[in-house]
Image (cartoon, rainbow, N blue to C red; front, side):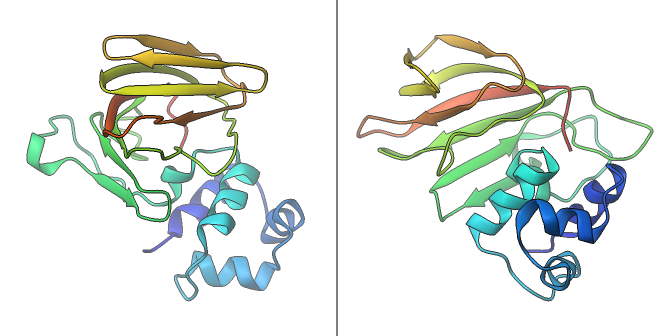
Length: 182
């Protein structure tokens, strides 16, 4: 998996390798090797880097292109076997100035008794979730909200949260983030 997106996002935010190093606790050399595809980071390292850059982890792993029509068979997918989750993008994802999407949408498949992330996550985008199949729990800092098929939920930006599938069947939901945070 090539992670050149780390450098692109880091530079876009005006951060040096030294800045990212102080935020993550990893050496500049290690981060540079990750950016150049010479080292493969662990999921924990990716999470720290994503948190430090204030972006969702999946944005570090996608190859961007210029598309308006996204056919069913050609959607970009991110499979994260470490946490047993699949993200399938249903909106264009692009860094090209021609498109500049304002939202990112994805279908998320969450396997039984699995979490979206290994800890509470926070991002600078608003998020809307719609449950297509199954049940998920939205874990917030101080409460848990259960959502069933057909339910929807809206999260403001900067709200710590995680999602969990408490059942024995796969849960599938649509998630939209705005603004699109790449």
